[in-house]
Image (cartoon, rainbow, N blue to C red; front, side, top):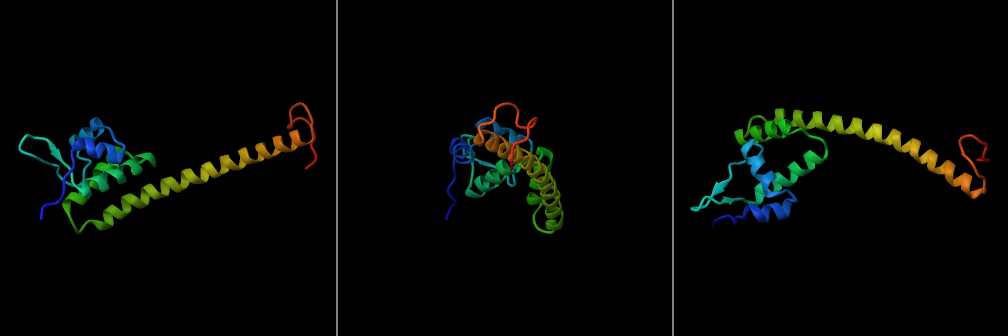
Length: 137
């Protein structure tokens, strides 16, 4: 039984990537498998390709570089035996994301405090800058 294939347009629709981006990913070696082509030269994607590209969209959204995605794709294409290196790439990216989350949480704490201060300020009907006058807590 032959695995169902998808056109580049169908993959673009399913992944949210543009056709241009899909071609770029292929040219840059960012795909985990080689994309087959039909007799007319049109790209034929599989469900596995869609899954990989969906992951790539998330990787990019989380700040992973194209170089890192390319290295990960290269390791996947090489097959088994390099799982520890794949894991290390993902752990390093995980560490960076956790640092970003920590920074964002600190920023959110400040914003939450400011929002709370303005809400109290307005609830008491006080005018002026809430940070220059004393508003009861």
